[in-house]
Image (cartoon, rainbow, N blue to C red):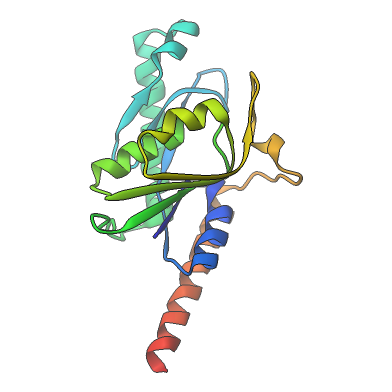
Length: 199
């Protein structure tokens, strides 16, 4: 099955799941953001409450323990809220005998994908494949050892890399739009399955 990292990964995952005729769900993760920045972070948390913190970033930004804990709690709260939004009360799928393809819109620092892989391993996923349109070479290299395969069409190098810079046309995807796209795909899949049973 395909697992999207919301919100930005959902439009990409819809295309991947549709092309491969696979079911689609979400692996909710979030950056642990710096207090003064809405984009940059120093770690990430996963849907199973797993936490990864980059000690180098903590040291570089001189973050004290109360700040680290406060920002981590905020990220956990965001993940819990998003799990309710995107998954509702649906039980988590059994992934022990199923390969999963984790899809995002790209990998910059790699913290969210790193924690997504960690969380999926914790749930017992047997095989994890990463599929992203674009990624920074160093971040991709750090993640590769923890997964079975990586597919990336556009690998970037350099001191800094923003995922949006790799796209010709870029729009931020808000939560409600991503949720609508996910629901529309799942409804379409249910209709196809129903039609196949009738035939």
